[in-house]
Length: 117
Image (cartoon, rainbow, N blue to C red; front, side, top):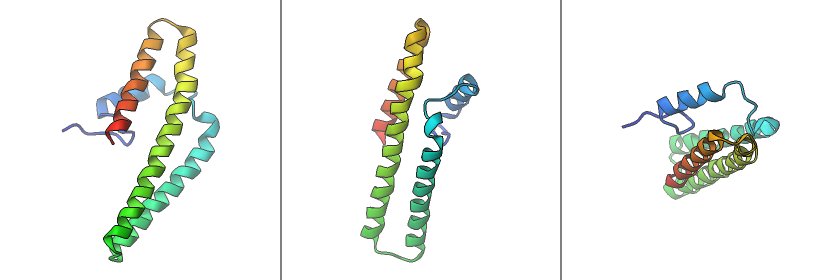
């Protein structure tokens, strides 16, 4: 079994990605505040799920909230992916060479991970 980072990358892959991109301006940078607000809202949904379980709420009601939380995370991931394509992949395309191939492969793997969830 592979241990994963919060981003869903295997630990070694996530560490490598961080090392390669620590000092870059990322595609989501301009919307960072909006993203954090959105993630805090999702975090609140998850806390609400914990409360529902603690309070013995009907299972179907909990599942409805799980679905809403899942959709919120998927929507966030899709927006982040779009920003990655518009910024990081487009920037690599301008630079050309092996970098574009690496960015396309990276994006393809991210899409594959999203599809498995």
